[in-house]
Image (tube, rainbow, N blue to C red; front, side, top):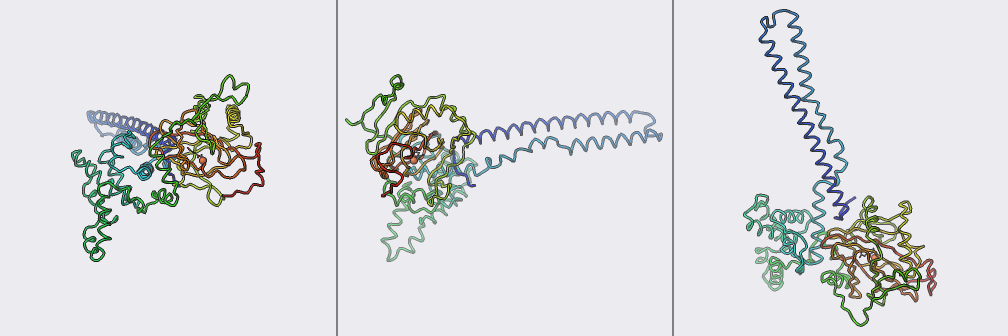
Length: 486
Ligand SMILES: O=C(O)CCC(=O)C(=O)O
Ligand SMILES: [Fe+2]
C-alpha cells in the first residue's frame, strides 16, 4: 500500500520507532564494548601466560610441557576465535526490520508531498514557505539551503518541474547567503535549474529560434515564464503535469473549488449580522435546564449550527488514546460504490471507526447529547469515525447523506469550509459542528451543503464524525421511496 499521510499518529509512531532503533543501537554498543573488553583482557592474560613460560628455564624441553603448551595454545585460539566471531551483539538488531516501512526515504517524500500540496493549494511560493510564513502568519521554522535543495530533489523525482525551479532557485539564493554550506552541490542545483527551465519552457535559444512569425505567441510565453522565474509560479500552476497537481486539476472543472480555496486561504471571516444569534438551548429537556447547550447559528438554509463544549477534555483524551492504536489511512467510497479507495487528492489523513468491540460506554452519553441537540435519533447512525489530519491533511468538498455532527479538537486553523455558502467554520476543541445535508421537507439533497476540510497548514486537526441517517427519524417525507432529484 502506498502511504501518503503525515498525520500525528504516523509521526508519533515514527518517533517511537526511531527511539526503538536507538535503544537497539545503544544495546549493541554496550554489548560490543563488553566483548572488546573481554577480548582485550584475554589478550593480556595470554601475554602473561607467554611471559611466564618464557621465563621458565627448561622452556619447551620436555615432552609433557610441549604437549601442555600446545593444548593451551589451541584453547587460546578457540577462545579468541569465539570472541572475534561470535558477535552476540548482532542479535540486538534482530527485530529492527519489522519497522522498516516507517524508516527510510519515503517518509521525507511524504512530508515533501504535503508541503507541495499546501504550496499549490494556497499558492505559497518557495520563498515564503521556506521563510515559514504565509498570509502574515508563522507556519513553521525557516528552511535552510540544504532543506530547500531536498525539496528540489524530490520535485525532480516527482516529475514536478515547476517545483524544481521554485525550490532550486530558492536553495541557490540561500546557499550563497548561508556561506555556501557543503550539503548543497551547486553543480547539481545548476542542473536542476537548467533542466527544469527547459522543461517548463524557459529556454532562450528555443525562444529565439522558434519566434519568427509566431513572435507574438512566444513573447507571451516568454513573459509568462519570466514571471515564473520571479516567483509568480502559481499563476501557471495549471500547466504542471505531476500527480500532486491533480488536486488542482480536479478542481478546475468545479467552480466551487475556487471559493473553497479562497475561503481556506483567508480563514474565518464570519461577520455578525442581525441574524447571527446564539442561545442556551434546552430543547425542553428537563436535565438540559440544569446544563443547557451553547448553541450558535451559522446558517439557516441549510441549517448549520455549532454547539460549544459538548465533548469534555477527559472524553477527548480517552477517544484519542483509543484511536491512536488503530488509525489507518483514510479511504473514500469509490465512485462506483463498490469499495473504498485510497485517494490522496480527495482526502488525506488517518481514520478509525469505533466499533462495538471497543465497548466505549461513554459514547452512549455522547449519543444522548447529540440526540438532544439535533432532535434526531442516533440508533441508525454510522459508527463514530475519528480522523486525524496532519500536515497538508485535507478533504475536498463533497456531499454527505442526511445530517451530520462533527466534534473537534484542533491546535490550529482546521476549518470546515462550505464553498457554496461562503461560510467557513472554525474547528474548536470540544465543539460540535452540525448541519443538514438534505432538505428537511422532502429529503432532496441540499446542494449548498457541499463542504470540505481545508488543507491543514499548521498543527493537527482531530475530528470525530457521526453521520446520522433518515431511517428511524420522524420525517415529513417517505425517505424509503424517495428518488433524488439532483
Ligand atoms: O474535516 C472536516 O472538517 C469535514 C469532514 C467531513 O466532511 C466528513 O467527515 O464527512
Ligand atoms: Fe463530509
